[in-house]
Length: 258
Image (cartoon, rainbow, N blue to C red; front, side, top):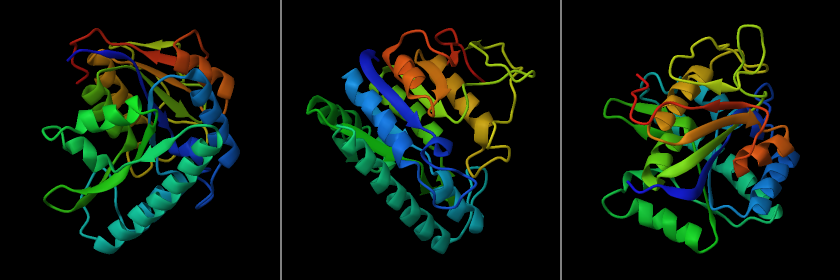
């Protein structure tokens, strides 16, 4: 696929848009600050946000996760309602920051043959910012969570994005001493499985899934940058492709991430 170097996929982590320790909390100032950084970059951006204390709070109540299926239609309904509430808040903050968010269902990504890429491309060309989120899908056996990190992989592949910026609640991946790993390659495995403020795995697999999906993107040629979403200046640097404080994940193109 021809790589569209100007398109950037941005993941606003659930631990950034909300305080996961407080159910249904929302960090409006944080999201607006990140929105201003994105607006000022003038880059064509696609945004994916996590469930945070909205989606994960409800999903856990009903046993929904990305690891196993659940038959709970009530859980699906309540989880999607929570995610739509959060999405409305995120879009309102981005709009207040000077962006033009266009929320869409991640199911649009499945519409590859009917022009899913063209749909998103047209939105970007028109000056809009497509915004989507982690959701719930049926896998034939039951319902499970579709992680926002996995959606980033799909978007990066669909658009041939050169860069994906993933905002988290610390300064990047940490090594065993708690120091930031500047570059994580295919043979780098000594990172802390825990993040400050997110020590328990969430409904989508936590940091382990994030690293696996980041490796998948990197192996396909998309540079992945993990940066603190609580530090807008560093987020802006990561977004623009310049030197920043955080972790860059690089895997030789075509090398399987396992």
